[in-house]
Image 1 (tube, rainbow, N blue to C red):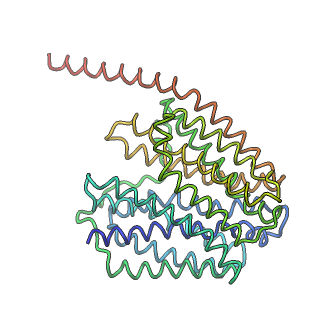
Image 2: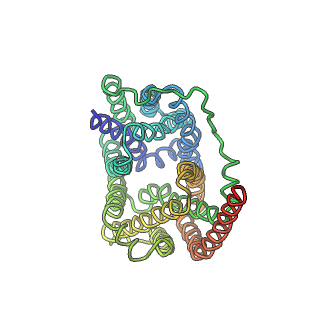
Image 3: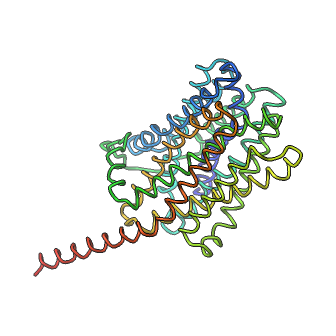
Length: 414
């Protein structure tokens, strides 16, 4: 029974990222054409950012509603909402309609928090880590398969096929879930407060310089990555003369490389370098490889570009585990859920800023977003170099506070 539940949730999470990945090779060029061509690159960033804006607000909302109403109804309604979003995408021949479709899909893709809660409900402490690893695997598969399939469908059947295909998959998943997925909770928290804008908690995080620096490094890292991801489909089409099918294959290489790095290389690299050096070298690798993308010679494109994308994925794969490890090791167990929730939420802000900035800078000159990414990763390298001293001060202060608490406790009982 549990295996069936895990499989259904795996499919749901996979479809969330598959639906995001399937439009990556196609959407920037499609938006630019609808907007009127050159000079409208900033519109690309606005439309793409709609997805992340909606997801930023919906993630805590849907998670809170699932505590009040149950996981099953929220998952079903969001799957049906995704159907509407993708079928709207299939007929989106104007910018407002396209913006509406991406906003609906972004909002409904906030159901990841509900799927995570469902997994927690049905898993034990012993298998919870393995169960949560399923989320990473679903993300990896969605990003490996989504872009190549999206590029292929667009090249052979047209843009409408992307929405029709994804919407049909979501509809099928909703039907299967309706008949096979039971509710995972029996006690509903009707009075749970839903915090949509955790700005006060962000302020508390930044009152501790160590955590504030980790959040800033993460924000710059995600923003810099989007300075690669958003302009690249336009660059590869306009300057390297690739069609959407081959652009999809390139993003598929990114997905495969990321999976290889996370599955086989991150562990040995962490043992060899440690968190601080992973941050430093991850930022350096990211900055250099992203900046190299527009300078790849055409005659060596299919040798150098996949190589560049692999090393970009290597840098990417070093940064996030190091940041997560720093957070986990230096946060009390009873506060880790809140801390990681804030960390992911703050990252969502970068997924809003990054697309707008990337597309706007590309409109100035195709090299500008990649050069800007290099500057950001140089800044991140400098921030990472100082993380050790900041951590030492944090631990010293924390130990002093712990000692004071012990003394106060002893005074109470003396």
